[in-house]
Image (cartoon, rainbow, N blue to C red):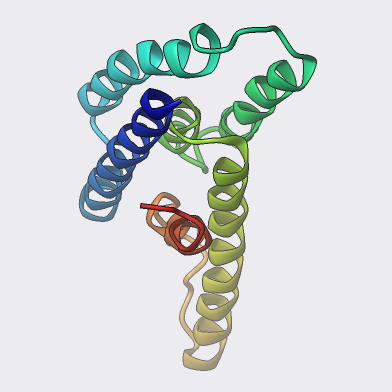
Length: 161
C-alpha cells in the first residue's frame, strides 16, 4: 500500500518535470524535441505497467476502462493533427499520450479540457484584438502545451503530499 502511494507521487513529480520541460520548449521553439519524448516514454512505460497492472491483485473491468480512457485525448489529438495537416502539432498529441502514462484519467481530462478552453479564449481575444486594431492575426499559432497549465490547478489542489 505504501509503495503504491509513493510510486504514484513519484510518477506525478516526473510528469510535472515533463510538463514544464515541454512548456518551455513549446513556448520557445514551438516544438518539443523527440529525444525528450523518448526519454519520458522509456521512463513512463515500465512505471505505468508496474503501477497500474502488476500491483493489482485482481482484474477488474473498471481498471481496463480507466486504462483505455486515459489514452483517448492523446489519440484524439493525433487524429486532429493528421486531419488538419499539422495545424495542431503532432507533438501535442504525443505529449498527451505520454502524460497518460504518469497521471490518472481524471488528471488527463482536466489538462486536455483546460488546454482547449484556454486556447479557445485566447484565440477569441486575439481575433477581437485583431479586428479592433485592423490586423490579420489568423495565421498566428498558439503553443497548446503551455495553455494546459490551468488544468494543473485542480489537480494540485486535490493532491495530498
